[in-house]
Image (cartoon, rainbow, N blue to C red; front, side, top):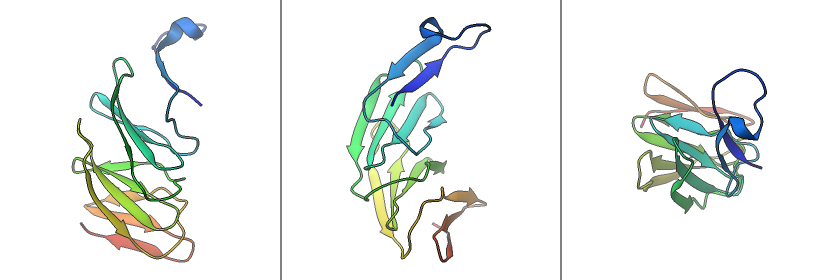
Amino acid sequence: GHVLAVKAGKGNVSESGFAWKHAKTTPDCSTPIVLGDRVFMVTDNGIASCLKLNDGSVVWTKRLNIGTINASLVAGDGKIYVQGIDGKCAVVAADDKGEIISVNEVDGTFYATPAISDGVIYLRAYERIYAIKP
């Protein structure tokens, strides 16, 4: 697949309506997120990327080693949270270095996107819900 930045406007949004396209290391399931002037995304097999919002150029790409990913990314407190299906969750700095801050693991199978509210991260597995306060 491709990640596309579309110019705002009216009428036919064809090739001329694209600000940029990115075709490498793109997600099939997970939705990218925009934080400031950066786009963060992760592939189903755990390759995370940061792109510049203005032109789509790659800032960094990293393998997270947390298995298969279906959930979309969530962000809070300057960090990106990436939940793997098998229970591993990578915490990545939402900056131009993308340091992997930690990888945590809980029991369960996770397809749902985590939620963050009032400083608590909620993870929904098939059989339980976790509420984690970092």
